[in-house]
Image (cartoon, rainbow, N blue to C red; front, side):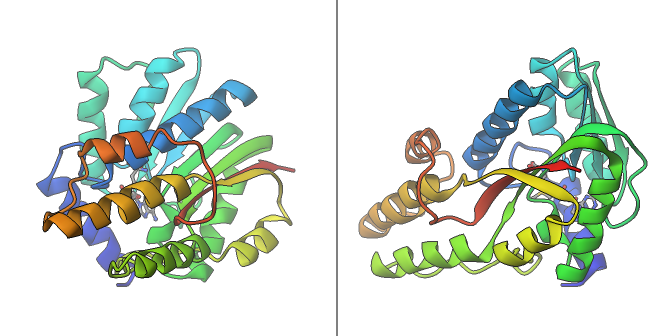
Amino acid sequence: MDFDQVKAYWEQRAGSDSSAQSTTMDFYLRDIEYRVVSGLIKIYLPKSVMDVGCGDARTTVRLSAEHPEIAFSGGDYSASMVKNARGNISAMGIENLDVMECDVFQALPVHDLGMIYTTRCLINLPGWEMQQAALNNICNALAPGGFYVMIENFVEGHENFNAVRRDFGLPEIPVREHNFFFEREKLIDFVSDRFDVLEEVNISSSYYLASRAIYSRICQDKGEEPDYFDSHHQYASQLPFCGEYGPVRMICMRRR
Ligand SMILES: C[S@@+](CC[C@H](N)C(=O)[O-])C[C@H]1O[C@@H](n2cnc3c(N)ncnc32)[C@H](O)[C@@H]1O
């Protein structure tokens, strides 16, 4: 898919589904992401935080409620996502979160931020060239010393995980046609000119092994379809992070 087709896909998702699954079917993965960003906010104590590609802002709404002392913002290029986000913000009575329409491929309409995070946003940009431009735009919107918490999908963990699926007698999970996963070495090499990398961890490895290898195999044996709301997913999401067997990785970096 090209840029416009991916954007149309998200417009359509937002217009047709305002449930907790409109930006991802994987409800518990978003819960892991929320806990990871929340932990980093508590360590680095930024005064301002932006969620780029915030979707309907479910993660940011939780973080804003938890940290009323921080000025939060959210940006998304889908007008319908921003509309849904505003609905969620007002339903929760959140006062320290503003959302706006913006495209991470263009210069962001903000500056001097203390922290930016993305959760599976940049994988929607079709190709490494566009992703590099987006990383530059994120860097430029941060204050010197500001933090970028990148939570995105990578090919290496995805391939390791599919090898486990094959060993379990399960079909591989393909990369979805609107997603373009990162290659870790290329990414680290690129960001190292602008950022100091502070921490990186695969946050999906134990979760994927338990939910999409063990639980999926149990479902296959029983002839049932896996259910994202099944308690296997819930318990899997509470496992400690270990291994490199899932696509989603968190890299925390600080702008020089
Ligand atoms: C997988 S969803 C994740 C949404 C949210 N971060 C979450 O975790 O629930 C990806 C989001 O990124 C947004 N997005 C994709 N490309 C974008 C771009 N170039 N600029 C701004 N938002 C973008 C989509 O509209 C969509 O809402």
